Amino acid sequence: MNNVSKLRVAFVNTHPIQYFAPLYAYLTARACLPFTALYLSDFSVRGSLDAAFGQPVKWDVDLLPGYDVRFVAKIEPALAGRASGAVGRLRLPQ
Image (cartoon, rainbow, N blue to C red; front, side, top):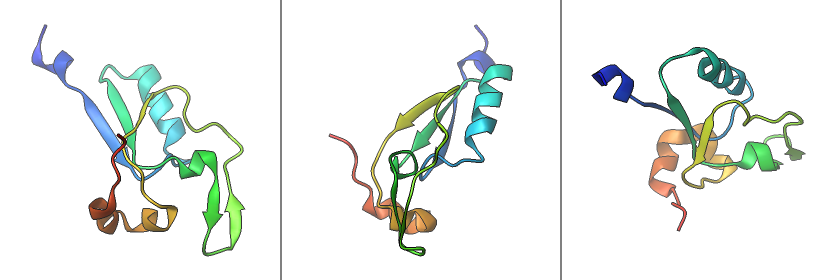
């Protein structure tokens, strides 16, 4: 086994994002480099209140099929746009 086959990549995002999910599924289906999408929250798939619009928001398409997904922490939706500020406020699962 060579070193390339041992290499793994992780994409870290605050939450599942509608324009990344199809890319991740495409890469999984066609790439020889295994990767995992690590998400800090699931609010985009479970739904949450969009503070800017004052409306509940939930995607009507499944953002998770076709690639390896791990939810590794929880951040509040309000912090998602400020990922660098959110890093100090992560709550890791028990």
